[in-house]
Image (cartoon, rainbow, N blue to C red; front, side, top):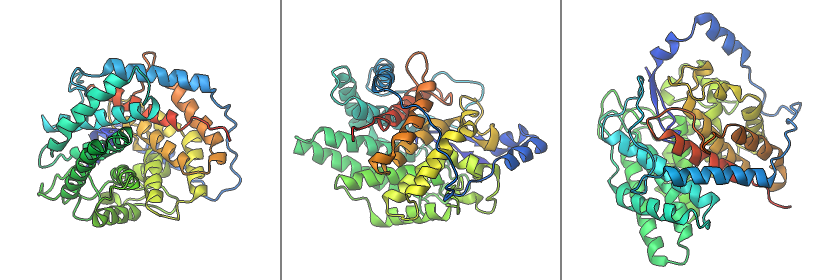
Length: 411
């Protein structure tokens, strides 16, 4: 059985794997010992001590951001997009051409554009890159479609395009006609997401069994989370998504939430909640996404203590994600973690951080900033999984938006 990839890109962002390949790389003894070592910590555990991580100086933070911005400027395609179906390797994810790569490029470009609009909206260096990416998005996002009957990667493109368009809407605050155009593009993405939502609500990105017009496969928790975040951002600028679609996606995500606020990988694994991928260590890269999404849509159980607990876990248990980073075979690592969970998970941790009172964010900002700065590449980018030539741009987009949320405000 295939496990889904976390696009994450493409993220949000991307990837796939046969579970048989995962299990073939694990001995039963090694798997059992890893599972027994990964125990949950109660969400309300008041005995935990937040690590004393020195805060990153504003100068260090800005220097890392500047290097990431410069990488995106230099890496942009001539037509304004980011990424390409090059740099193939012996093991490649299932990607029917050309539609899969249209989706990967749309998601990657949207993330890179969103990052530039967040971290350097007025920087003279970024204006030409933003303009080119904006024009590319307007030209291509309306034609993004399902790659094939079984591959529905386009849902990542629709979700991340909404986030980029929301930021473009703010960029054109003085141009009502342009804002109207952007609002119409966002509503077009709503229609696409309605078309490709699962019959049970939410979204997956495969439909191997029936390949029907409306996908019959179950939804995937972190895809739901990523798209619900995008829909909430659209709602917050006055562009309301269809209520029925939102309600069904929330319900599908709630069905995959466990009592400790870890989340099943997908609803199709609900009868195997103790499988490694469904344990807290396996959920570490998607819990942040699902928690932030559900809280944005009014789930009061995702309170400040839950957010803090999982930000704490993300730092002290980061090895569950980091061991999988840069591995070429998805889900081969401990807890069946895939590399493309890494920067995806930390971006949504940044969104969770924003949901805390500002005066309580400092320790968690320090943790996230340290993780990002320690992993920046020599050329200024960040990447976690070799996905053709999309990974450096989407990883850098996620990391820049994470660092943006680590900028401390004077209280």
